[in-house]
Picture 1 (cartoon, rainbow over the protein chains, first blue to last red):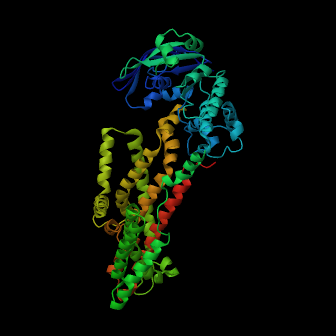
Picture 2 (picture 1 turned 45 degrees about the horizontal axis):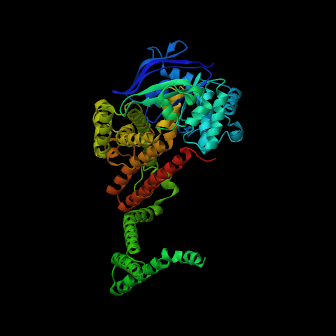
Length: 259
Length: 357
């Protein structure tokens, strides 16, 4: 069910400010693609433009093409709500719905879209999603308890379970581990490895070791100067990026000489 | 070796961590002394209660910081002075509340009886009768006001935060809501009266007219509290919902409003409590009657505040029975408002997002 994404000549604006300039890349299906780069270089903005989440911010707009399975996400007839059903997202800070139990949180995507389902079907989805997010064993005895009562790492895995419960084609992750401790981080990295077989995963991270550990391909974003739009410097297989990058500034960033 | 040990032993003394302190019973002692010092001349010279209390407070506010500055130093003395002044201010603020409650309870409790709650004033002259009709009227009028203003107010709040944020029309609406908050209640009553005269001719009296007048007062409160509560809902929750492919209106009804529900319901309950005691608009448009009236759309309807007003102003002959009933009704009204406030607390606790394990 996973799909690839073709991005060509994408510019992203916030009002008059051009935040990201001229990005073109192909994100392969059933692989993990990581974006690295200094803060403010537009990697999160670019990630959000892949499922039209940046539109939540007033004044944000996009020029260029993002094509998934032959359809341009920014075509005239495209409904952003449908896009987001196909392309799920996990955020930097865990954000389970505070009014809902663990069980309801996992089902939120289905329930909020008013999908009618039988109890057994719902139970199946909850179990499958929580197992998929490596959380089932920890919470199976307290599914009725509030989602906010879990630890930070568990909450983040709950959010991943919630995202995969609607069975999207693509899963976007915006620094999913930056608020977590190393053990939770490693749990989520293992999870990303497992999810790779079913989903196309795009992850933004500040942690270069993490990019090297989890991703198949890596994109390096950078700013030409402060106030200038961010752009894609290099996009290559992770192995090549970390061993022998084509671009000098990539090597400088990865080896820690700047950024 | 010895030098190191000396240094370790000497270290605590070189960093002073202890200071002289007044014993914990010092404020109590000073208070007792102050009361005694004020009461002794007071009783001998036959002062009233108020001057004695005033003198006792002054003695306390002067004596405790002085003693403290002698023993503990100026920082602690300032702290004790500020604490004493804050407590004195608190006590001063409680005086009106305390005396009001005392007045109403002492005058109202003797009137309360089964008859008082179950009889109207129909054909009652002098002793007897009750406030059944007024309680029914207050409940109906306030419930209708809530029915009108809660949907309008909540929807206006949702518009202001979720749809109109930052737009010109939202700013205008916010400004108008602020203006509406300041509308005198008598003006709201005149507005409702003028509105109903247009349809039913002069001299119209209806319970629903009172409800309209009260909702003019209630809507701005509901809009304000809804707005404030929706602002507190983190944007991350909205984004999480959008990212699951949930449309905006479902995000608002299923995620944003439930998260803010505790605050909104509390705000609504407090608004109801606030308008339940309004007199002036009901005086104009709902009128007063001695009989029970269950129909908000016809005839006059008695309400507790208006009942209190007329019972006290026109107590009948002999006057004491009417005045007694006014006190009893005042007590019942205060009890209803207080019950609504307590209810608001329970509701907010019930709806609050749960974080327990």
